[in-house]
Length: 284
Image (cartoon, rainbow, N blue to C red; front, side, top):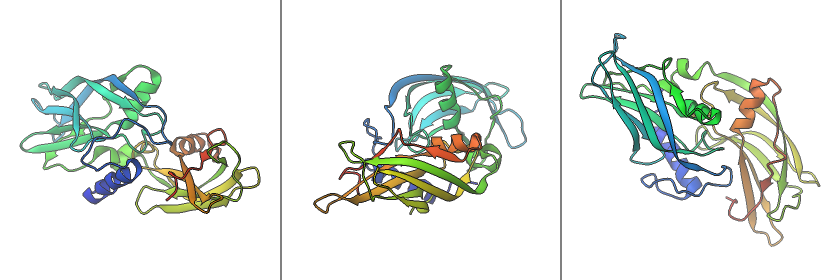
C-alpha cells in the first residue's frame, strides 16, 4: 500500500484540526491532552543502513537524510553519504519523543534522493523501540531502501513492511469519564472512532453509567502489525452538555492499549486509570 498525496494531505489536515496550526507551520511544543509529556533534543544513531538500486546492488555516493515531517517543509535531523557498497551510518539530533503520540503526530523518514532515483523508509517504530529500550540505536540491517528511478514507494506502508493486515477484530473497552473536577460523568455518549481515513468511522458506541464508567464493544477493527505506530489512529471520544446546556467533550487515543491487547490475545482494553475528562475545549 502506498500513501497517496491525498492521504498525506488528510493527515496534515487532521493534525491542523487537532493542534490549531497550519500544515506549513511547525508542530507546537505543547502536547494535546491525549499525549504524554514530549522529550526534546534526543540523539539517535542509525547503523548498518544500505541503499540498493532496483537490481539489488549497493548504490554508492547517494545522499541520505532523516526527515522530521512533523514540520512542513520537513526538517533534516541527520545525513550521510553511502559508501561503495551502498552502506551508511549517521547520527540524528534534535529528535523529539512524544510518548502517546508516536502513533499519530510524529513522522520520521529516511530519504535517499539523487537526480535519477528516489526511495524512503518510515522509521517511527524502530526509533520508538530504541528510545523505549534506552539504546538510542536503530539497526537498519534488515531494512534496506531501494532507490528506484522516479521511485515513489513508501517502503514502510508496503505490505511486507507493515505485515499482513488482520480485519474484523472485536475488542472490549472498559473506561471512565469525569468532569474537569474529577467527578464521574453519567449518561455521556462514547464512540470509538477509527481516524485512519477522514471523516472518522465509528467502530462502537456506549453510554456511561451513574458511576461514569462504560463498557464498549469495538468491532470491525483492523490490526496492521508493524504500522500501529504510524498508520492507524483509534480514539475514544465522549461528548455531552453541561448544566448550562453548553457542549463539553474529551477524547483518549488508544492505539497502544489496543495493540497490546491484540498481542496478548486478550482483546480487552481497560483505560479506567486514564479517564476521559470533559471540557468545553474538548467539544466539537
